[in-house]
Amino acid sequence: MSNKVTKIGVLTSGGDAPGMNAAIRAVARTGIYYGLEVYGIMRGYSGMIDDDIFHMSTRSVANIIQRGGTILKTARSKEFREYEGRQKAYENLKKRGIDGLVVIGGDGSFRGAQKFSTEFDIPCIGLPGTIDKDIAGTDFTIGFDTAVNTAVEAIDKIRDTADAHDRLFVVEVMGRDAGYIALHSGLATGAECVLIPETRTNIEDLIQQLTEKEKRKKLVNLVVVAEGDELGGGNEVGRILKERLPNMDIRVSILGHIQRGGSPTCLDRILSSRMGYHAVESLMTGRHNVMVGIIDDKMHYVPLDTAVKEKQSFTSDWLKIIKILAS
Ligand code: F6P
Image (cartoon, rainbow, N blue to C red; front, side):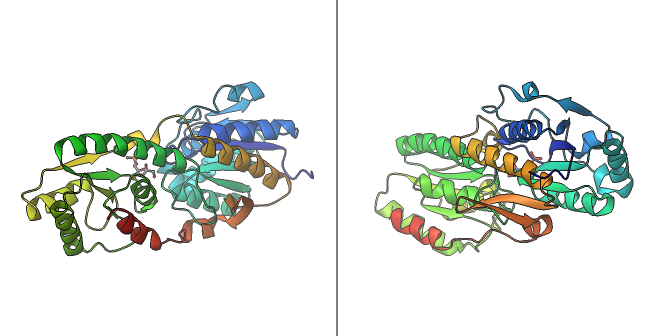
């Protein structure tokens, strides 16, 4: 493999996602295998600015493939949004001779990487690390599968108590302004309906659907709400439903940050390992400022700015399937 870089840095930025550690491991070990020097950068762009950077060996990433969180820690750096911050960061890379970066994070992290590499001519490769799955150019993002499985496990438990009390449960899941966690976990748990920001929710239809279900003595009524839904999050949807359906026993459950933790699933570990390997290969072959994605099981490279501007295509028939299967 031709070698366009000699020393590379790796960082995790934005909200942590299960599988980030597996991706760090893959970057470090692939880089060292090909004779590169690899540096770990702590707390995302903050560590680049504060010069919190260390030399990695293959042992630095031992025993982490199965761990959630990120050994490099993560942050959302305000200073990096300013030119002065980015310049400081550049000086710290330059004095070590770091000539390539792998940024594992979400859309905000990619925006930073894009800007940085244009200003200072350091090639950056992005790996999509976010539980939200709100990045184009890849079927899955690192952490999404684990987060959805965590949500499914939690909702299954809620179903037990909902059934025992004949209650309607409104469950809020994460996703910022994207509805993928809600859509996937809702379909997988047999939810009555799923409210997501990508589609407008017709509250009258929802009320009618829930009323009919009660008449037919449906055992369990679960409504999964994405936190970014335009009606509001779980509390707001719960408030509306309690007001409109006073005879129903309704509870709200907000799953919260539990969805960000835990050991990554097999899918997330494989995704992270393949993407990490290809991030290093990309830097070595001179592929610059792209995000590494996987579509239909094949590696896919999209410019960083395209990855953040475009959304994944949304499959609207999923909502229809959820409705039919909940009948
Ligand atoms: O982007 C990942 C995410 O977990 C979102 O789903 C959520 O809206 C947000 O981060 C929460 O951020 P914080 O941990 O800063 O509260």
